[in-house]
Length: 160
Image (cartoon, rainbow, N blue to C red; front, side, top):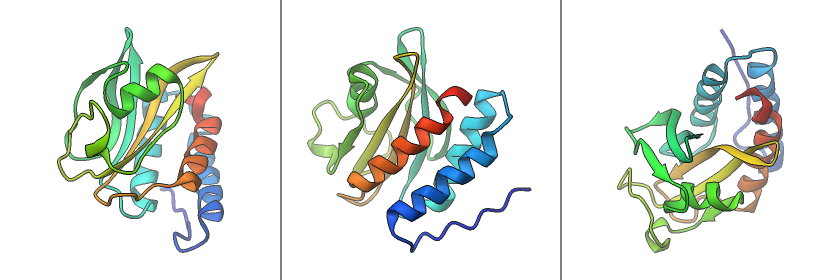
């Protein structure tokens, strides 16, 4: 059993530093990418406040395919360039969306989602997956959240 003590009331930079350490501990030495994505999705779900979906979409045959996650049932396949996840996969750039309803081509897997943060996972210069975080609160994610998840992705990219 794993127990992590991440202070969600700490400044975001401190909280994400602890989250990355915890993810590193969970995935270090484990070669199964699905197991690692599953534990990371659960860790994000447990410790990030005000989220209603945390998880991964994997690149399979040129499109995003649902990976391990926490939250309501989700869209299974997303083409590159479609929605927030597809935009991150196509551009290779983090997508920080304050209001998903204003995002062109937004895919509403959960009608309760109001904001979204999607960070591409890169390996050898190619997007291999995206980390997707949704919140029912508009404007929930900010630059500090993006930096925190980008730090997480840097640690886990070779483990998924």
